[in-house]
Image (cartoon, rainbow, N blue to C red; front, side, top):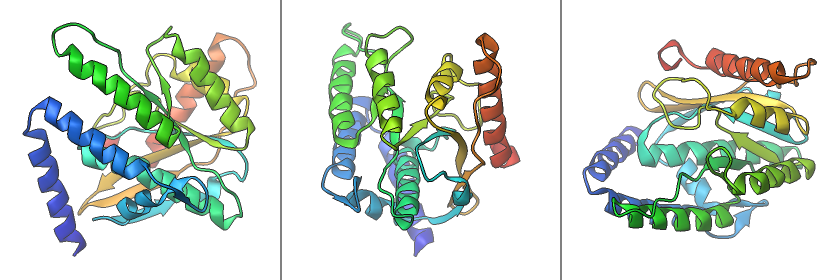
Length: 257
């Protein structure tokens, strides 16, 4: 049954990418609203994510014993598996962490820091980009996603303050150091080290990796928490991001590094 569902999912993805971008965008927005909207179970995790969590795949989780009881920053790779599977990866991590914490009597769901892209008001597809930004903001408010822009964007200060407040309140913040999806682990985006250094002052950093192995088995693994390097200055963030990316690479299979 699961193999048949996985075949259907791949067929959906192939059909999805064959239609024009504006149609894909509308479908994606509707899917996101359906998945993220609605009351939560056991706290803030929407019930709809539980349905998606159980859809179509075998799942293997390891390393949950490494998750701290208090606030934490999860630094995870951003695998490129298309729109459907890309959404699933987020739901997978959120559901796994939320359920783990519920067993400990805790209530906190991860809040992702995501790039919102740039707003394009030119005539070369600018209307689509404008609506993408508008819907992105609405999804952010519904799901608690923390949106950041390019380096120097005005919203970045507020986004960092929101992330820090989440951690100080005992919550969980998720960062994808690569900044964009990739089939194999790539170099972290500019500023990823400084962002982790800032957040790491409030909570330990837990490297994590997600990937799909043979026969559509979805895997999620957590490494031991990382503390900030004892040194100060510009080298601190470099040492930190190198350590984080190294731990993520250690969790991934050879063909995903």
